Image (cartoon, rainbow, N blue to C red; front, side, top):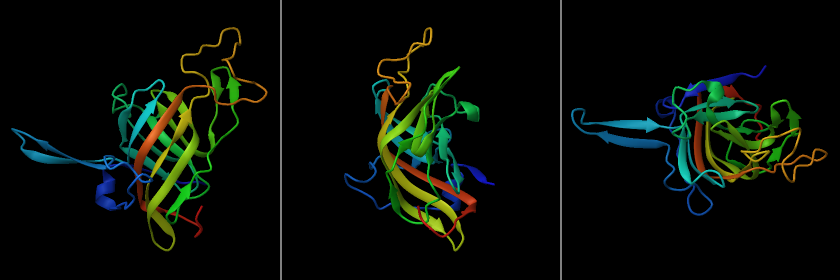
Length: 232
């Protein structure tokens, strides 16, 4: 049985400190730091440190370019490593988990060392009573304002792994890529109608595009995730 380990992003600064040495065009954008320092004026006159589990930049044909942060994450030994929080101001911080914005990636196993994963594949697209649905066979997907975008192409780069002989305690890296919705966001099926270009016999993504830039992430578990000793 898979064991899912959930933790709040602020614990990351306390438990483990990982640093990435990636830079230049192939690395993460220098402004996407996971720790932000803010100075408060009177009457407080103090300094606050905010630590996120993911920080990146998004842009698309339906979303203007903007930064986003996630403050919680789930590190799973096999798949569904998930980062969530409030990616946009329209979603409150106290949202329920089922309503949360999130970035999630499906991998064959937990990383045990630096590596790059770029074999992204969308699973079978199905049409049900509530419209189309899908999941990733491999690679990432992101949900923003209750809209799911599936990874089409890009890469997940693991830059640092903190582990001992049997458990992984933290992974850090960055990802960038192109995402797409199954159907156009504003499309409404009337009488079973389908959006232009969507073939029921061979369903593909025909919706809105989204580009995720320079997403730096750090996911950590205090108890660790058991690994088999092999990398993906």
